[in-house]
Figure (cartoon, rainbow, N blue to C red):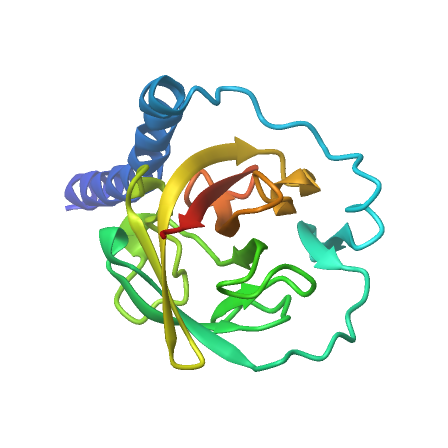
Length: 214
Protein backbone atom coordinates (compact mmCIF):
# COMPACT_ATOMS: atom_id res chain seq x y z
CA UNK A 1 0.00 0.00 0.00
CA UNK A 2 2.75 2.44 1.03
CA UNK A 3 4.85 1.44 -1.96
CA UNK A 4 1.91 1.98 -4.31
CA UNK A 5 1.25 5.41 -2.83
CA UNK A 6 4.92 6.35 -3.20
CA UNK A 7 4.91 5.31 -6.84
CA UNK A 8 1.71 7.27 -7.43
CA UNK A 9 3.23 10.36 -5.80
CA UNK A 10 6.42 9.94 -7.83
CA UNK A 11 4.46 9.55 -11.03
CA UNK A 12 2.44 12.69 -10.28
CA UNK A 13 5.63 14.60 -9.52
CA UNK A 14 7.18 13.51 -12.82
CA UNK A 15 4.00 14.50 -14.67
CA UNK A 16 3.98 18.00 -13.12
CA UNK A 17 7.70 18.41 -13.83
CA UNK A 18 7.21 17.47 -17.47
CA UNK A 19 4.44 20.07 -17.81
CA UNK A 20 7.05 22.69 -16.97
CA UNK A 21 10.16 21.20 -18.56
CA UNK A 22 8.77 20.21 -21.96
CA UNK A 23 7.43 23.65 -22.95
CA UNK A 24 10.75 25.17 -21.84
CA UNK A 25 12.77 22.63 -23.86
CA UNK A 26 10.46 23.11 -26.85
CA UNK A 27 10.93 26.90 -26.70
CA UNK A 28 14.72 26.63 -26.39
CA UNK A 29 14.77 24.35 -29.42
CA UNK A 30 12.70 26.89 -31.37
CA UNK A 31 14.93 29.75 -30.23
CA UNK A 32 18.15 27.91 -31.08
CA UNK A 33 17.19 26.38 -34.40
CA UNK A 34 13.96 27.56 -36.03
CA UNK A 35 14.01 31.15 -34.74
CA UNK A 36 17.67 31.84 -35.46
CA UNK A 37 17.61 30.08 -38.82
CA UNK A 38 14.47 31.78 -40.10
CA UNK A 39 14.95 35.22 -38.61
CA UNK A 40 18.73 35.56 -38.50
CA UNK A 41 18.46 37.24 -35.10
CA UNK A 42 20.51 35.04 -32.81
CA UNK A 43 21.92 37.93 -30.78
CA UNK A 44 19.80 40.31 -28.69
CA UNK A 45 19.71 43.92 -29.86
CA UNK A 46 21.96 46.25 -27.86
CA UNK A 47 20.51 48.55 -25.26
CA UNK A 48 19.62 51.81 -26.92
CA UNK A 49 21.54 54.98 -26.19
CA UNK A 50 19.47 57.04 -28.61
CA UNK A 51 19.24 60.55 -27.17
CA UNK A 52 15.74 61.11 -28.49
CA UNK A 53 14.47 57.93 -26.89
CA UNK A 54 16.09 57.75 -23.48
CA UNK A 55 14.50 60.93 -22.01
CA UNK A 56 11.01 59.54 -22.73
CA UNK A 57 11.31 55.93 -21.59
CA UNK A 58 13.12 54.03 -18.88
CA UNK A 59 13.27 50.68 -17.09
CA UNK A 60 11.41 50.54 -13.80
CA UNK A 61 11.67 47.49 -11.54
CA UNK A 62 8.30 46.53 -10.11
CA UNK A 63 8.21 43.50 -7.78
CA UNK A 64 11.58 42.36 -9.17
CA UNK A 65 10.19 42.66 -12.71
CA UNK A 66 12.01 45.08 -15.06
CA UNK A 67 9.37 46.87 -17.12
CA UNK A 68 9.59 49.58 -19.78
CA UNK A 69 7.78 52.68 -18.57
CA UNK A 70 7.21 56.23 -19.78
CA UNK A 71 8.90 58.94 -17.75
CA UNK A 72 5.85 61.17 -18.22
CA UNK A 73 3.12 59.03 -16.68
CA UNK A 74 0.51 61.78 -16.74
CA UNK A 75 -0.14 61.81 -20.47
CA UNK A 76 -3.83 62.14 -21.31
CA UNK A 77 -4.95 59.48 -23.80
CA UNK A 78 -7.00 60.70 -26.79
CA UNK A 79 -9.20 57.62 -26.23
CA UNK A 80 -9.10 54.84 -23.69
CA UNK A 81 -8.97 51.45 -25.38
CA UNK A 82 -8.78 49.47 -28.58
CA UNK A 83 -8.93 45.78 -29.52
CA UNK A 84 -6.17 43.50 -30.82
CA UNK A 85 -6.75 40.27 -32.74
CA UNK A 86 -4.02 37.82 -33.75
CA UNK A 87 -5.74 35.01 -35.72
CA UNK A 88 -2.65 32.76 -35.78
CA UNK A 89 -2.74 32.25 -32.01
CA UNK A 90 -6.50 32.48 -31.49
CA UNK A 91 -6.33 35.87 -29.79
CA UNK A 92 -9.56 37.72 -30.51
CA UNK A 93 -10.48 41.30 -29.63
CA UNK A 94 -8.19 41.51 -26.62
CA UNK A 95 -8.85 44.72 -24.73
CA UNK A 96 -5.86 47.11 -24.86
CA UNK A 97 -5.68 50.13 -22.57
CA UNK A 98 -4.23 53.28 -24.16
CA UNK A 99 -1.32 54.95 -22.36
CA UNK A 100 -1.14 52.31 -19.67
CA UNK A 101 1.57 50.31 -17.92
CA UNK A 102 -0.94 47.97 -16.28
CA UNK A 103 -1.26 44.68 -18.14
CA UNK A 104 -2.53 42.46 -15.32
CA UNK A 105 -6.07 42.16 -16.68
CA UNK A 106 -5.61 43.32 -20.28
CA UNK A 107 -2.98 44.37 -22.81
CA UNK A 108 -1.26 47.70 -22.28
CA UNK A 109 -0.25 50.35 -24.82
CA UNK A 110 2.93 52.12 -23.74
CA UNK A 111 2.36 55.83 -23.00
CA UNK A 112 4.12 58.01 -25.55
CA UNK A 113 4.33 55.34 -28.27
CA UNK A 114 2.37 55.72 -31.51
CA UNK A 115 -1.36 55.08 -31.60
CA UNK A 116 -2.83 52.53 -34.05
CA UNK A 117 -2.56 53.77 -37.63
CA UNK A 118 -0.04 56.50 -36.82
CA UNK A 119 3.54 56.74 -38.03
CA UNK A 120 5.91 55.20 -35.55
CA UNK A 121 5.59 52.15 -33.34
CA UNK A 122 2.54 51.32 -31.22
CA UNK A 123 4.12 49.33 -28.39
CA UNK A 124 1.97 46.71 -26.66
CA UNK A 125 2.83 44.58 -23.63
CA UNK A 126 1.04 41.47 -22.38
CA UNK A 127 1.59 38.59 -20.00
CA UNK A 128 2.71 35.11 -20.98
CA UNK A 129 2.65 31.75 -19.22
CA UNK A 130 3.14 28.06 -19.99
CA UNK A 131 0.80 27.42 -22.95
CA UNK A 132 -0.62 24.23 -21.43
CA UNK A 133 -1.66 26.22 -18.34
CA UNK A 134 -3.24 29.08 -20.26
CA UNK A 135 -6.89 28.11 -20.03
CA UNK A 136 -9.75 29.89 -21.76
CA UNK A 137 -10.35 33.20 -20.05
CA UNK A 138 -6.74 33.47 -18.92
CA UNK A 139 -5.23 36.95 -18.83
CA UNK A 140 -1.98 35.63 -20.33
CA UNK A 141 -2.99 36.93 -23.76
CA UNK A 142 0.46 36.40 -25.29
CA UNK A 143 1.02 32.83 -24.05
CA UNK A 144 1.19 31.58 -27.64
CA UNK A 145 2.97 34.59 -29.14
CA UNK A 146 6.07 32.47 -29.99
CA UNK A 147 3.87 30.63 -32.54
CA UNK A 148 3.56 33.79 -34.67
CA UNK A 149 5.59 33.90 -37.90
CA UNK A 150 6.46 36.48 -40.55
CA UNK A 151 3.45 37.31 -42.71
CA UNK A 152 0.87 36.63 -39.98
CA UNK A 153 -1.73 39.32 -39.31
CA UNK A 154 -2.17 41.57 -36.30
CA UNK A 155 -5.56 43.28 -36.50
CA UNK A 156 -6.39 46.41 -34.52
CA UNK A 157 -9.86 47.91 -34.11
CA UNK A 158 -9.79 51.48 -32.79
CA UNK A 159 -12.50 54.16 -32.90
CA UNK A 160 -14.45 52.30 -35.58
CA UNK A 161 -11.40 51.87 -37.81
CA UNK A 162 -9.71 48.56 -38.60
CA UNK A 163 -5.95 48.41 -39.15
CA UNK A 164 -4.33 45.25 -40.52
CA UNK A 165 -0.64 44.81 -39.83
CA UNK A 166 1.65 42.09 -41.23
CA UNK A 167 4.41 40.61 -39.09
CA UNK A 168 7.80 41.57 -40.50
CA UNK A 169 10.21 40.71 -37.69
CA UNK A 170 10.61 38.72 -34.49
CA UNK A 171 13.40 39.27 -32.00
CA UNK A 172 14.45 38.12 -28.56
CA UNK A 173 16.01 40.83 -26.43
CA UNK A 174 17.27 41.59 -22.94
CA UNK A 175 14.51 42.83 -20.55
CA UNK A 176 16.31 46.19 -20.23
CA UNK A 177 16.60 46.83 -23.96
CA UNK A 178 14.47 49.90 -24.66
CA UNK A 179 15.60 50.15 -28.28
CA UNK A 180 12.63 47.90 -29.18
CA UNK A 181 10.36 50.93 -28.75
CA UNK A 182 11.88 52.54 -31.85
CA UNK A 183 10.17 51.81 -35.20
CA UNK A 184 12.33 50.07 -37.84
CA UNK A 185 12.18 53.22 -39.98
CA UNK A 186 10.94 56.79 -39.70
CA UNK A 187 8.15 56.58 -42.27
CA UNK A 188 6.41 53.28 -41.53
CA UNK A 189 3.44 52.57 -39.29
CA UNK A 190 4.23 49.68 -36.95
CA UNK A 191 2.91 47.79 -33.98
CA UNK A 192 5.10 45.76 -31.61
CA UNK A 193 3.83 43.03 -29.29
CA UNK A 194 6.10 42.16 -26.36
CA UNK A 195 5.96 39.38 -23.78
CA UNK A 196 8.24 37.35 -21.52
CA UNK A 197 10.07 34.27 -22.78
CA UNK A 198 10.64 31.40 -22.34
CA UNK A 199 6.92 30.87 -21.56
CA UNK A 200 6.51 30.76 -17.80
CA UNK A 201 9.80 32.59 -17.22
CA UNK A 202 10.85 36.25 -17.55
CA UNK A 203 14.54 36.04 -18.44
CA UNK A 204 14.10 37.45 -21.97
CA UNK A 205 11.55 39.34 -24.03
CA UNK A 206 10.02 38.30 -27.34
CA UNK A 207 9.06 41.24 -29.56
CA UNK A 208 6.86 40.69 -32.61
CA UNK A 209 7.00 43.65 -35.01
CA UNK A 210 4.25 44.15 -37.62
CA UNK A 211 3.84 46.81 -40.30
CA UNK A 212 0.57 48.37 -41.42
CA UNK A 213 -0.48 46.83 -44.73
CA UNK A 214 -1.14 49.21 -47.58
